[in-house]
Length: 235
Ligand SMILES: *Cc1c(COP(=O)(O)O)cnc(C)c1O
Image (cartoon, rainbow, N blue to C red; front, side):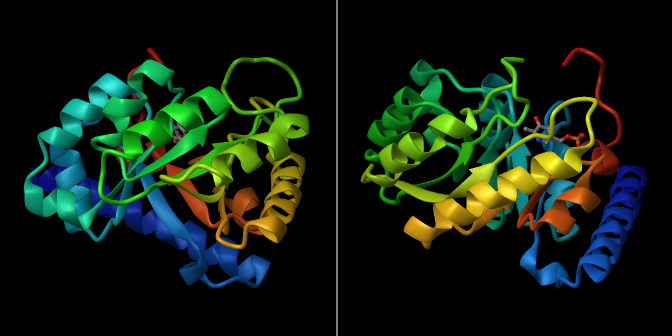
């Protein structure tokens, strides 16, 4: 356990140095960035170690795994963390996700938004959400609303009583230079913010492309393998 703690501490340190360097290059302050550590495929014991190392935000992308893992956390650890859900979501799972998630980043259709809103209405506080944008330009099925359909979905989400629209999220297209995709996301985030001043988040940047995301203006990074190590192959 202390070995794992040391490993996670060293990896976190390396990622924080990368963030600091990218911020220096971009003329930004690291305080503008929230590091969300993606813990999918790794046990609740790792989540507890990360919380102990100062991590404030974690993310999961598979509903079943996430529900069980979050439920098994020590209440003290759970209280110190914001839990984000970043995976593809079915509307019949929305209610269950709102029971353990503080944030759902992967809202990409009106049907999901309405299901989350109904479920969040059962809680005593709104659910924070970001709308996921598909930057691939094709239908690769990695989730996300196409940019042309984004304004309508943003209006829908903003009008729902129990959701709080915080901004946009995207994954860079596979195998392409992420920079132009992140610039597109930044433009979409900017125009979203014009009508919805609360929507200040731009969630972009993972282990392999966090520097490009910071250069483009990301506010939330979602970093998994650079901190936890490589995942088993079956994604
Ligand atoms: C797994 C995952 C990440 C983290 O990816 P890494 O390359 O391991 O940093 C980020 N965002 C989403 C949506 C993910 O599913």
